Image 1: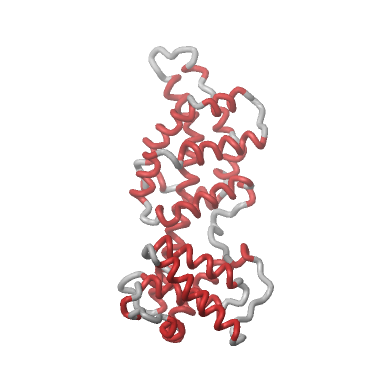
Image 2: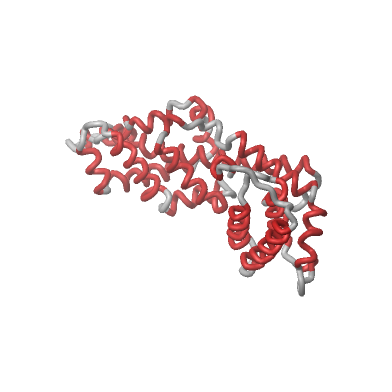
Length: 296
């Protein structure tokens, strides 16, 4: 949708380039979230070094617990070759990160959940995983300083935040089984480009299907974004046989509500539902067995 809506783009080549750029931006944001998370966990060692290096360190200064720096889930992430390669320049790219990491860690260090975690010297897998999820969900994302850095460095943060939260949490379930290189599967990338190209190539035809349904509406006054959303929906009805029509309608209603006007969700719902019924009656929609997760 963003690639179709982007001003100044003409032709399929530039539009596909824009889509791939969006994929790359989301990939870097994804890696950065893990980078911040791992830096927070690794800061225990820095904290221990700083406190031990005081002129007159106390007993507590010399006994800073660094258990979290040896967290098995943490090292599965850090030892991923692609994660190493993808984040090796992040220190210079995102210099504000260090101050935020320090602040979040010091909040973590006094939290009851963390204090309970370091009491147990064992490496209980559920506990190792849960402490990471706690840092990410309860300390990192709600932190205003973290959000400020994300908004400063990533213009796509607001659009991608919900998706990123789900992806990170899913990966934390099985960190060793995820490839940081394959952020977007080949199948999903192909789907995205295919949908983009279909709407570009068949735009006039798709718009001709919508126009007769716009009773009492001036087609030239319809929000451009609404028109794009409806064209994408109809393209999925007609040319993507593995996507169920209910999924298409529901997703584009949500997109319209999120990105367009207050009335857009209701408007898009009405048009797509009307066209869906008409296409079904005319036997123009043919779907096959599908797996929603594999396609979306």
